[in-house]
Image (cartoon, rainbow, N blue to C red; front, top):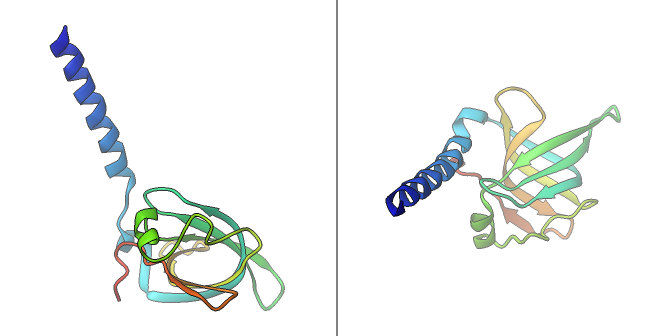
Length: 131
């Protein structure tokens, strides 16, 4: 009985880690280092989660059309080491984002750096961004 419980517990732990490993992706599979982008906009959402923190910004083009972009950053623990916190971005903040566009052409990018309205620049390199 004790061995059965131990085996079931071990299987559950392995499944938990397998899900985390398979859900993570390579930077190079989604983003293109040859397509740098700089975006200026207003933060609409900031999600502090693993494996990558995400945020969205509304960006207005020259014709007045607003597009909501999704920006991916490094993991929260890496961001903490770079001076970020859960409160670094708030809805309504005006920011400038430097990053790399998604290969699939959607309004999504891997974030390299974020410049806040105060002028403070935060490193946000996602794994794999080392041009």
